Length: 435
Image 1: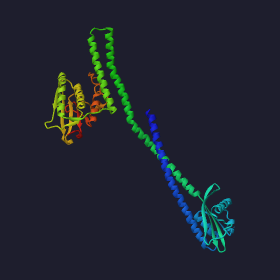
Image 2: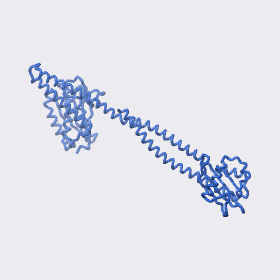
Image 3: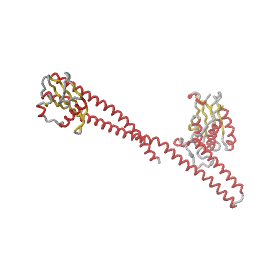
Image 4: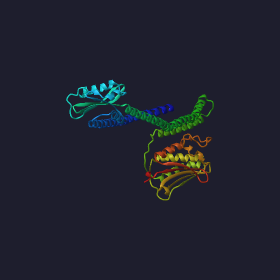
């Protein structure tokens, strides 16, 4: 599924980019080609002005001068004297077909009234008209003019092939096309890697969800199996003492209820539907209440349960008191669970001058501790350091929930080693929550 989505996203990005490149290239080509055509047209007109001026001033036209003009300005000339072609031009082998010369003269006569064969009353000034012409499979610029000369006139027809300009435009279009294709190829690789990177969190999240469902199913199956087996035993009357079976069913049902509650809380965190109700909380008072709450449990397990509060007044913290109680309960129960009888668990509140009185809460124990390579894994779902641990009330979800509660408060949970052995969890509250 994700591979198909990866391909679709890459194709979509390439298609959108190709469309944008095509539009921009067309705009650039239009501007560039318009400039080329205007430049070539201006050059053609400037060449014509130079030629007509020279022809007005010269008393005779030589074959050498005509060929020099054609070579310099890249066009073809046909000159008539009072309607008769010059002698040397009739001997030239010109690549322009006769029909094209005739078409140019007819177009000048029909559209502009410039008739090389019957000029009518001539002005003392040279008259010429320029236009476009197509023929012989090519496009041309054309100019037809009449130059008064004594009692007669000289007729001039000029044809300039546009093949060179069209080849220049074609080369430019091909250059743009190759540049666009190269850009699309590079962007295609970029989009492939970029979409792959964007999809990676989704893929990992899906894997985690599948692992979460598999682990949750496994955790739920165990108490459910115990419940069903005890129900079957009660119905069959296999053993006396139904009260025992009912106690087991009640215990396992409570365990299932707690697991489902934890799963629902994590699902709410994943959906960003968790909310907090912040209020001004005195952290030293809250910690003292939590310490008193867990004092009987510590005594029943033979643990030394200590608390350390600062002597100086502690600033109030804008937080959700119930959520913070839940976070501390998770850390404390986790410490109690892994600390052997006779060990010590300590709850402490302090400020760190290095962070300008940032408020920190620590829960430390002197249990077996957590190896460095497993410190990050303890915050993952259904991760338990000791798989053989017999405490069935812990499913490996508590620290995940605690971390989510910390994130809701923009706080941070860190795990370090307790001096002398054990684990220490530190919850650091940002300055923005303190007042």
